[in-house]
Length: 299
Length: 228
Image (tube, rainbow over all chains, first blue to last red; front, side, top):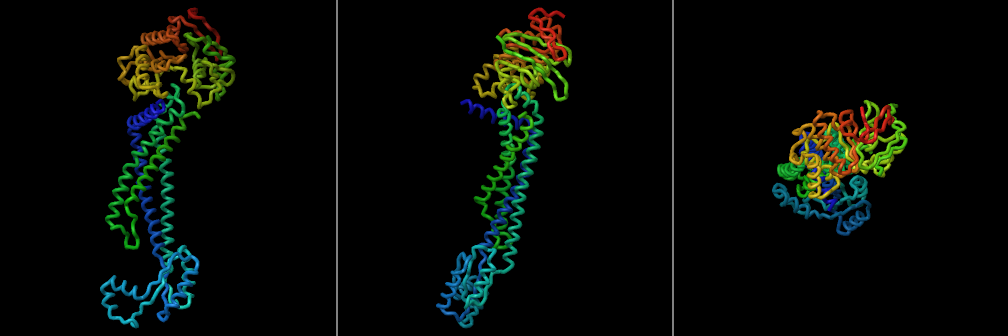
């Protein structure tokens, strides 16, 4: 009972602290809000870039074209050789009939050209589509596949893919760096703002000490106050994340520039992002208060 | 029965100033003691050491069985809970009502609401301010504010009440009003130590008087023997 009463009193005192010192609380809340908005943007950007990278990596395949003279047993030999290579995630044989039909289905122009082709006229070759485990070693695999007897050509979007992936990787790293830097800056800013709030209440802390409040007695209401400030400061960033990202997603129909670069589905992504923002707000608010009140306790 | 004992207490500040030296003193439970002396004689340092705002450089200070000089900063609250302190400038929370200011001291310890309510009202009744519980400090006169501070200091039922020039900011009549309140509290069994410059009050009250000079006790008048 006693501890429950103390907790309730601490929460009540913290709320009183927030509202009775509203101008300073407002300063702290604004500070948290602004930085959390920037954190939210970096977070969304970073996660999407990460997602692009994964999509690109998943879609990168080596296409090995097979000599049209190769018969079924030769194809089987090639299959065995491919399966014996290292770094192979999966591979699939795609007969030329299948590719032809897919192409005809995909476009009327293709269809009108290709429908009159005889089997001999059809320049399309049987292929193996190969996915690798480690995208960075795709060159190596491609070279080995090229050497297999019966393979006439190997294509895998050389250079472009690697460049794209390394660019995405770079953006992702910058975003993560920005998020970490922002969190640190926010913690520092909030700590300083709360320090001003608390300095203006030095008298209150002095009186609390005088009438026998322990350091914990004094610190807890301020830490809860920091928690409340963090929570209030994360309302607008969370709202913007949920509403803003949904709007963005719908505006771009879930893709950026091309169907190749898909945005992350808003649900549940925005809720996870919101939880992270609230978590950062709360932790940073509490840490800021803890740091700020420390100065006034002679420990 | 002895409540406070100071043995060979010396206090030298970092600045090199020695405020208290060779001080030996004993105060019994239920006593009312005035500490007087010229400015800079060590009065404030002496009482600050009693509630452990300052630590003695050497010597021993026992208050209510606790060796105050040996308390770590984190444990200071242990002695503070046994002592009420009243200051010249009242030290009230300006944004809290009279009731909240007094209740503050009890809420920290997690007492039930009913108990807090009855104790706060009792303390405010004793100082004659039960009718002003909803006022804020700024709406009260100086004497009334000091009475709120006294109510806050005694609401815990401390064994010792330390008053640092509680009448310093008040006119003569209001000052005497405060002294009547303190006398009432003393009659109920609380030991009171009061630092003051006001010799008239000291004379009128007829209590034990300790005179300090250059950090030493130069006179210790027993109850009713002090004459200017």
